[in-house]
Image 1: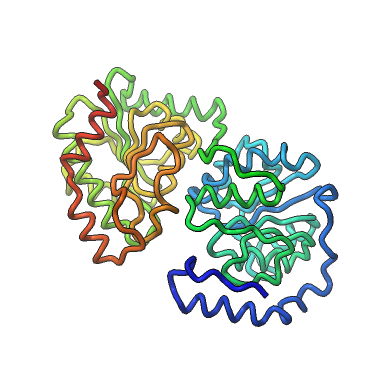
Image 2: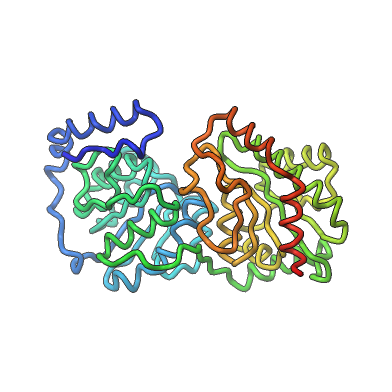
Length: 376
């Protein structure tokens, strides 16, 4: 039995549940009775990566994934990453196959039989937070080598435990998990990597031409949406920054961008805040968006997928961190991005978030953005 680490829990009730899972270790081990014992790394031929699979989550780990062939030369790796999250991994040399479906929750669920047929030798559960579903799937699939974080309970199901260095930037957790599995130091860059193809560059070029984004004028792209529960509050602050920036810098071209289902909301905000920004009716494919970010002078966004996508192409990024989360986990992790609420509180309530956002000096933010686009 391993004692869960209390400081990694925001909710004491979940800590209690994790402790109960450790007390239940004998019963959990009974579920492993028909699974073969773990084997040496040299015997691994097929591995499965399971964890959080939103676009940002996959981008967090993309630099570590690219190292898998060097770290495990005899093992090919697959990953569960549906939709656009899987598209991000096109061309990544560390991934053999992307399974385009959510993590199956039970026997008979979509994708389970396909995964079972692969007879994987090893699984890496790379999430440092909500990892119960991934490790349960690994057990249900009968995978003999099960590697992952176990500081939040259910440690009986793991054959190799990744030690948690808390708090760390989220990309560092992924890096630490891969390094632990390989038995090497986690000493590589955390910057995401993507591998756009010629077709993506062509789509981005056509998009720029359609909006006369020729490069003769600076370009700033604003992505004010996020899936986070408190994001709407931060979105409005970001739009206030964009409005003042447009007013003070009429020579800069601006784009307002989001997912297809966010366009109606963006259209409302464009009208409400009287923005000059172009608002595309249809989103670009994710790797074409990366190419568009590459050509931008600055990307203004929340703590969301576009932030990490822009980081992957070395764009200048100014972002509003998710104040409901730990500031080390969600703060800056590459030198080309700026956290607009750096040194503020973290793990905030809604009321605390509103108070901090209301105190932001918008004039100072715009001045910092302008000095980045127009360096002296």
